Length: 412
Image (cartoon, rainbow, N blue to C red; front, side, top):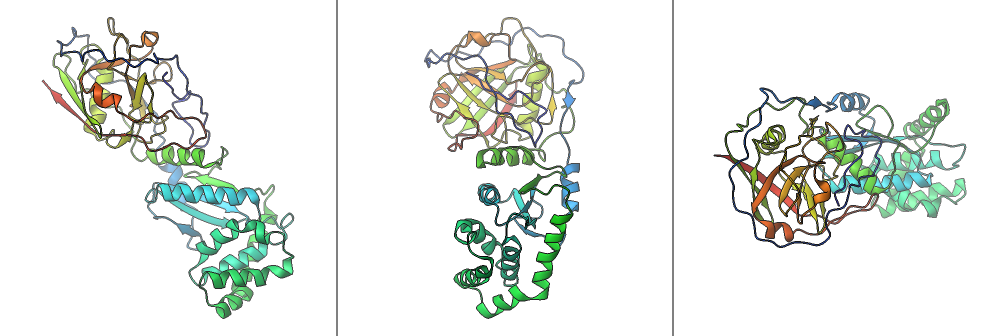
């Protein structure tokens, strides 16, 4: 079956993982590879390509970055595509989970994500929240903020039940284990500067109308309210990062319906050669050629591969991304999903063609009339059959998939 998102103009703060369509045949087919054929007769081609621009731009990300100061603790490049700002409390169990998940996201996309941490201690609920701030800020005086940050969350169960007066000695022992100078750490822990940070953080939290932690912002001045498990946070970050690659305009109409276009999809399993139907579905082929020539597809994962279909074309590798514009679903008489190797664009309803596409690995007549067919595989079905199986399940991590290394298009 083909799986897709229900919403194309997706919100980066709200993910609904429901992407089911009628099933393709579950029996893999191995008929002879079709031979090149003459292009179908030409349909009228518009002088410009009509589409709807849906890219959000970088305004929200800039607005979030503008709130950051030199006093913020951050890790990851300052020019990262995605900035994640977290308000948190070291004695909060959910905060520990989110901190771990976000760090795993950052490690998975090290050049793409910047994490920024701010204190929001709920001292009415957590008796050592302010002391934990002193511990981590004192560690920061020796360049060990993040080491102590990670340790406090990782060992939360160990210290959370201690009496408040026992916490400083426990923290000193942990600081020594992290290689800090014990005397300096103790002095910094008790210093006016470090205590002032804790006091100001407590006052800030007390001044909030309904303080809650963790509070997460992802390239936006509005809080993220979706699931906080690793797969969902990773997906949010990948979709957020995609915004930097999206096009804020409709592609120029460049294909000539009177000519033939042959696309070569280079994969780690071998090349797949496709004859494109520029005469029958000119808008879809034009967009495909534009994206291929722009490098949009380079390095994309075959994010879903079953016995019946291989899906790719989304650089976010989530199956939810688009190139920043959407356009009409074209229907062409005579084009059907009657064999393996049919290439078509994914959509999420009327006027939602984008960059994602799929290739059938078996006949799928139940899909006829639902998707814009843009071409037929001429050679390389064996490469497609060798792709690693990969069937995303909402909320679950996935193994790496095969890559679509590059698409080149030849005009004849």
